[in-house]
Image 1 (cartoon, helix red, strand yellow):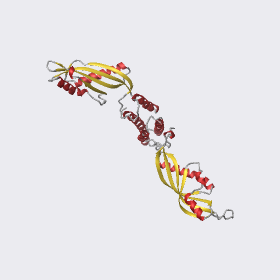
Image 2: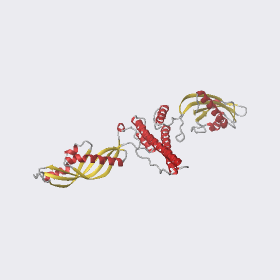
Image 3: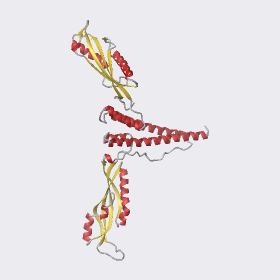
Image 4: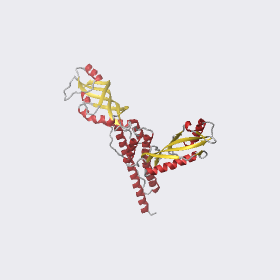
Length: 395
């Protein structure tokens, strides 16, 4: 391979890497925005929203944080005497602090120093005192994580320092102690705008083909993993009934959620009920014993847990009074009902025919060693929609 061909191949890999990373960033932002919109519209609960964001590795919901810091407050004020200045320093702060535009509270602690203020313009004023007090500063911020809340709180306080300095007030020695919270932010105050993640893409050296290939593969796999995670979590919420309401309406909303994110819609299926009537010939002393034997034989065709091999629920019954004496025992009429969702059929007729084939095969297997009359099937298509039996790992 020539150097030119190598460089061109690496450039192509870099382009694929960047595209995959940008697509993942866009998908993450859109998924988070759509999830928050569903929360605001009361379609999902807050724990469900938080759980999905955590599962997908996305930025969590914002919370309200109370952030505190220790500091020293210094200011000059007029008082009648030193005792009054000292007393006021223990319980009060300058009015300018209460009039700040952004929320910030200052609570005085112990008094560090109260001394007569230096003369101004050569004219000493014995009633003016320079006061320094240890204080606790509190502010309230909206952030997704504690570290972000601490940075935001520091920025708020620092933004006030110039205005306070103009009023002769200083806050020094700020030591941020931590946060109280987080407290849930009202749903209507949570922004839904999609904000793609910031950051630059780190690419490999221009002459390293294996590294460029590995970077491309990692970016593509990360995009695919996020797509799978979003889809699996959405289906899991539907399967586990985390989202209330009529199944089909809820499933359609989940499907549209996936489609809006550029993912495939949920699989659709025909809902078919098949009733099988069969008469079993069984050796038994009484009608009740014959019916018990029929139930034992039909357990092989009974299931309440659909799977890939048997995508249905099935159960049956008989009535002892309907059993009739036969030459060597009893004839027991048995009704077995199958409820199934079948995918991949264009019409109801196709789904019906497929359902009958599946039922006959299942009964033939279950009754291989039992003498019976011909099986009569009655199939009914109950409707069509998103499959009731979804698998988060496969669908």
